[in-house]
Image (tube, rainbow, N blue to C red; front, side):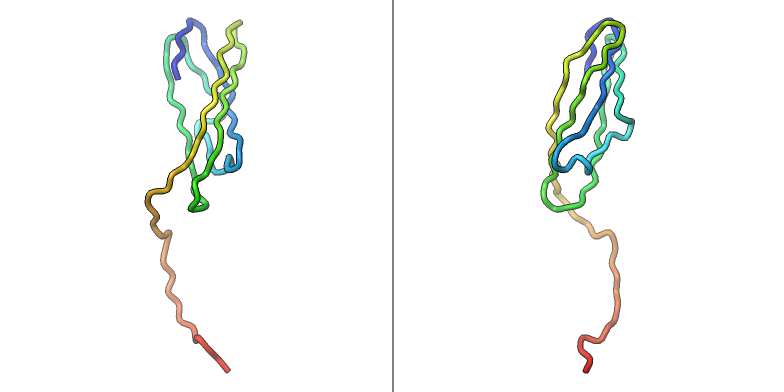
Amino acid sequence: LKNPSTKTLVYNAALVGRDADDFSLPKGNTITIAPKRQTTINVEFTSRFLRPAEAVLLLISKRVGGIHGAALTFFLKSEIKHIEPAGTLKCKSPCYEL
């Protein structure tokens, strides 16, 4: 995100939607962008299912020093390309008992 203005922009971030609990913002829900600077927002995803997860990232501007940025919306969709087992468990058991 870029801030072209001469004043600091502050956004409150919210994740909403069907799978919003699977996405998180590791640096917190408040994003501050200094004047004439840019910043990157990292979104983490924790997969619980094989189907694609979907959520919406909303950035809602807080009025700071008289400046108010535009609200921003981003559609998030996961894509699982590779699956590895978390571990393997071996056990012996009789298949049938009278």
